[in-house]
Length: 207
Image (tube, rainbow, N blue to C red):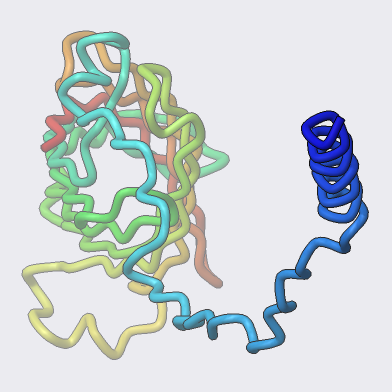
């Protein structure tokens, strides 16, 4: 009987301990109230920007578009005729040249000279505006200052008003074999005394 009592007492004690352990509150983890770690903010370096996509080289672009005209300067040799205007005779032949100074886009500076059959010459410098500059068809207009030179008067022509002209042209140019092009150029030379019409056909070489 005493053994049965001991067994029952031990069982009751074990049940009580188990219930007490289950009902006891769990220890709480202490809340971390420390400040968050500082984040270093660095200024944006313009040299660290996203690199642009590499551009195709001019040679590769010309390979894809063989009609692309990629030259910034040109030299033109030309021949033609001139006449007083409005009296048209076209009996004064001329030979000349023009050089376009290097610049990729218009307006471009151009200078040149012509030698006339009459023994007179003209030197001129002005500005040319080219349309469709990178294509094979390249029409343009030019405004220039022109000075007529006569060997009989030497430097005396510099002070003669009738030897100074305003020169204008509307030009048709076509690249027939890159970088060579043909240039058809009618020009008007105007001053206070008279007007001269010049028509030339030139061969240009770009580079």
